[in-house]
Structure formats: C-alpha cells, structure tokens
Amino acid sequence: MKPIISIIVAIAKNNAIGKDNELLWHLSEDLKRFKKLTTGHTIVMGKRTFESLPIRPLPNRRSIVITDVPGEQIEGCVMAYSIDEAVELMEKGEENYIIGGGSVYRQFLPLADRLYLTLVNMDFDADTFFPEINYEEWETEYSEDGPSGELPYTFLNLKKI
Image 1 (tube, rainbow, N blue to C red):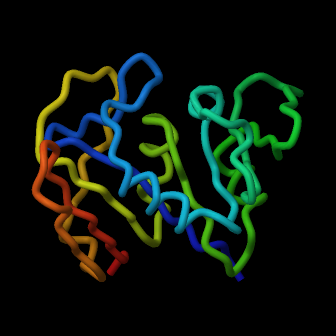
Image 2: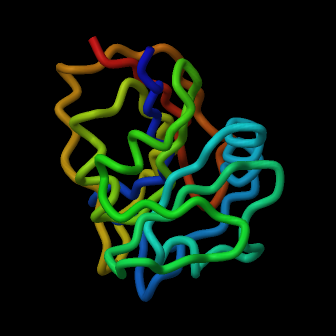
Image 3: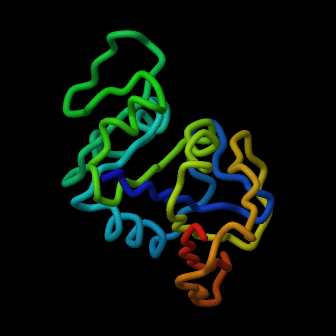
C-alpha cells in the first residue's frame, strides 16, 4: 500500500507563495483549514519551511523535514535526505501533506494524489512560486469562495484523474 500524497498550499493569481521565507498574507480561514486538515497526519516540508513555522514542530502532527545536509537532525522531527526517502517515510495508506516550500512542491507535484488549494485572487511580489498546475489532470472535488473582503480567495480541493 502506498502513501496518499496531498499538497496543501495557498497560491496567488501569479502563482506566488512566499517572499523572504514568509507567507505573503494572513488569512485566518486558510490557517484554520490548514490546521483542521493536517492535524493528526504526517506533514512533509523542506528545512526552510520548517524554520519559518511559528511553532516548531507543529503540534499533533508527525513532521518529516527534508534536508540536503547529511546526518542533520532536528529534535521532534523525522529527517529525510531526499524526496524518495521522504516518500518511504510517509504513512502508507494514509494522507500525508506536503506543506512547502517551492522546491519541495515542484518535486512532489508529479507524485501528488490530491491538491488542497487556497487560490488568492490577487498578484503578489514574491521570490517563491508554486509550479504551473495542468488542471486537465485534476478533477474538482470541492470549491468554496471565501467571504468578500479585502483578500478574495477560493478553497479548491482537486483529485488526480
């Protein structure tokens, strides 16, 4: 049985996801959704994403951190030294969430079974971007527009066809 690989990400209209190792916006509904979906599951991230977290490691989740520094250890985390090793360490038959950053998303997108997207309908100045999604490879399972406010967004759950 293989792991279920799910990517969870908030993306601007221009595919921006971050700048200077920080998020580009604060959407409380997006953060609540992230917590609800990932709690009790394995989350997979690069080391810089781990370092950007407000609480490290995030509570009630098993954290796999990918690093290219041989032998590096981070307390409370499972370390992986490649994408393939991270996949081997994932929970088989369970949903495992890829939470960033840009390079990790790029490498996992072809392997992903599901995408949990928050699409922010604005362009942002950024230094980190999500790769282009070929929407023909995905079917929509769920879509919900956020309340009209300063930052228009849509929650979109996609499953690989």
